[in-house]
Length: 322
Ligand SMILES: Cc1cc2nc3c(=O)[nH]c(=O)nc-3n(C[C@H](O)[C@H](O)[C@H](O)COP(=O)(O)OP(=O)(O)OC[C@H]3O[C@@H](n4cnc5c(N)ncnc54)[C@H](O)[C@@H]3O)c2cc1C
Image (cartoon, rainbow, N blue to C red; front, side):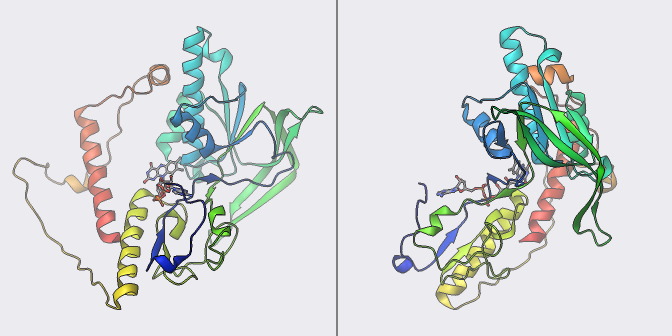
């Protein structure tokens, strides 16, 4: 079911909207609108649905987070797949350049993404902010203009970039992929949901405690409620929204109890001092093999030990976050 418009809520005692935030955000650069510039999550959606992609061979990915790496590494795999199919050499065809505003140390992407991205041949430039998508007279993308970024965050860790306009460069390309954040797609609110007020841009005004919008009986959950975070946050906010709806409908507060218990599983043993063991690096297969067979993975006892530790940590986070 796709929500095309928000019908009168008179038929419903309460509604929770949880449509996520899966539209790529733009930067409003000169030359950004038009062919050759694709939203990162739009590309990922097309890849996962097996849709044909109109992409060139010289690709610039703008962004320095995990989504930027999901995008860049998916493109490298797409190109490797095409290359294997047409028996061309990878090095002659793949040119994916990831450009991040942040320096390497400050990049929001996980280190493993950066390291494996480097191994897979993604070129990386740190400390550059885009100013324009350069187009030819015919309107084709020919490059992206950047200026040096001297600082991204201020002393209070607020996003407040400072640029050096004397240091500029153009990275030639024919395709630009934007991975600089996502926003929700809420056009369905224009028809019937006008009392659901917006806060800034495409986000809604939401009471952070009750998760209720400005419209009576309309609640939100997931990324739409708190901005883009992790799956576990979306699950937690879904539960919080359900409790709020219960309170809204019955006038009673649904108390949630934090139960701490230690269950010993018979067949599950951990070595002594497990919690203090450093995370083990997960062995990976050779980059070339990774690209040709993205579905292959390398598992070992060490990797499983590391996975188990991550799962424990994730479980703990989910537990306390509810
Ligand atoms: C590229 C990428 C990689 C990520 N990787 C990770 C990760 O590794 N680990 C992690 O924890 N988190 C990851 N996240 C974040 C995670 O995906 C989100 O935080 C989480 O999915 C948010 O859940 P949600 O239910 O709010 O929204 P979503 O999971 O986006 O679900 C929204 C649902 O609403 C539907 N919908 C949208 N519009 C309409 C409409 N008009 N009518 C009807 N249905 C509609 C959609 O089809 C979808 O089913 C990633 C996000 C992205 C973009």
